[in-house]
Image 1 (cartoon, one colour):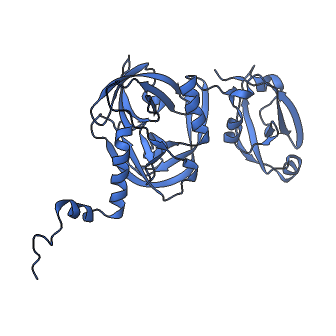
Image 2: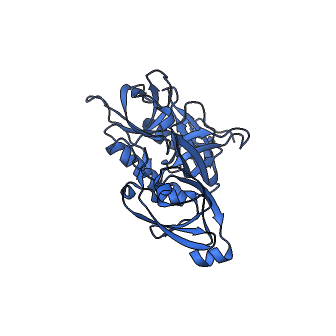
Image 3: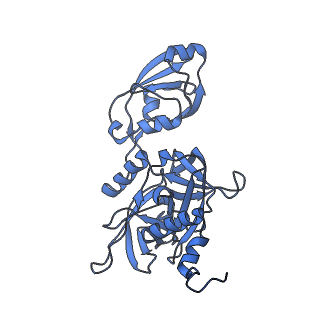
Length: 327
């Protein structure tokens, strides 16, 4: 039986039926986030660019610190072509996050903030979509899966270094200029800020994103309100180490942080911490890795005596350290 014109699906219906479930998710996320992902062009001695995500209707945008490195401001371009100047509110190289702010025109459409999700709820294999706006046109979209969780990425600011924990690894392609853009779930919730492309010696085609979680939310709040992030500083470097049975019984745990170096004149140095010591507890909290030690170095620890329990050989040693602010 020959179908009549009325029996045949129209162009819209035919196009919808041609999209499989995967495509529908990706296009829905792209459509939802397109108004919230902005192109940034910095001005200054080293002009550059990248992407940013609108996080508040009054003009706050979240991006990567390296996108605005050394810049005080520039131009933000929305997907609809609107351009507006922005100023850097604050940047934190040790988390590779920065907040910038634009001043939307009073007679223009309001900015559309993205909905932030929770990266700690991600699972390996979960679909994610990377949305950027590298050139200020319609944006750049790629999709893939979470290929790894619990990764870490080293950052540096001057002489200070830090490990960003729980970095999201994905095989969603990150195109040039996508740094600072959004990594989102199928529900269009932003769970990461795209920050780097891993080189071929580590994993071809894999990208990294700074997670959106309780730690990064605190960083963003500090950048929005104070323009910087205050951290406590001990002045030691080390790595995780398994404890011997005797050490484990003495400390009540199985791993600690072995000190590899102590900065001369630092709080740790003045308190008597030595290379080879194993940090077991700080302020009563067991530490088994550098990340856990970093998490304890919050603003409220600056200038306050802190009990540090070490294992020196097999014997526990208790020292009092007074952290200073990380410059």
